[in-house]
Structures are given as C-alpha cells and as structure tokens.
Length: 183
Image (cartoon, rainbow, N blue to C red):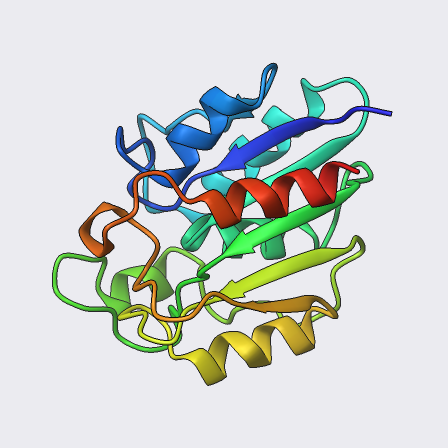
C-alpha cells in the first residue's frame, strides 16, 4: 500500500537547495506544508498548518520533517487528529537552549509556544536523525528526544544541521530512510 510523503520544513520554510526540496521532487504526489504568511513564529499556527495539510491528504501518510518541523510534529502528536504510518524527524532543533545567531531568539521562541519540547512517546513509529556536529542541537540532546519519543535513533555522523550551509542539498540517506518508512 502506498502512502503520501508530507514534508514539514523548519522555521525557514522552503529553501531551494535543501534536502527536503530535492526529496519532494523525487517522491511523486508528495506534499509540503505551506509556509505561513502571518504568525510565522507561532508554534500554534505552525501546528495548525501541519494539521490542515494532514487533513487534506487521503490515505496513509509518512512525514519527513526537518529541524523545528520535527518539533511541530511532536507538538501535533500530543493531540493527533488522524493516524500516521511513520515519520522521519531529521536534526530536530534544541529550542530549549539559545540557538546560534541568525535563528530566532530563545525568548521569542518561548513567547511563541515552542517550550518545552514535548517528551511523550509518539503515537507512530519514527526515525530521529542526529548529527554529531549540529550547531542547533547536541547529539546527546537529540538522542534523548529519540528515547523520550520512543523512536529509533539514526546517527548520521558529522552532517551539521543537514542544510545547504552544511553542504546538503541532496541527502541520499534521507531518501533511503523515507523509502524504508514507506515500505
């Protein structure tokens, strides 16, 4: 049985040379959560957009999320409105600590509902991808999220934040992980 892949970008939404953009082109019929035009930092608005995208898909869904998109999925999973086959949660950002310059400030994230990061087991199987040198989240922190979420941990090695500044456009391992979740 086939499923639709739903891509959930982080706070920077669509980035042309991002692994998610490349993967979305490779999976026919895939859907990407549309970027917000208002309340862009609102966790509640982001989770509502994720839920709207999920409700518009008929049949089974595999989620492929990145960075804060992984956190959106964890927040959505606190009160899921439908079943999900599985999820790939790549390099979740650790918003419980200040992020590097150029990213939203800790106080702004807190004021917009991102804290605390949910720690409940997810109601679907998930693979959490951790990087050994991610400037947005230490490996041990992501390992702890995977454990708390009842998810499989995938050690991606030293891949930074799995984004274009870290040298990722295309990410063949991500493609293989999505294919595995679709089976």
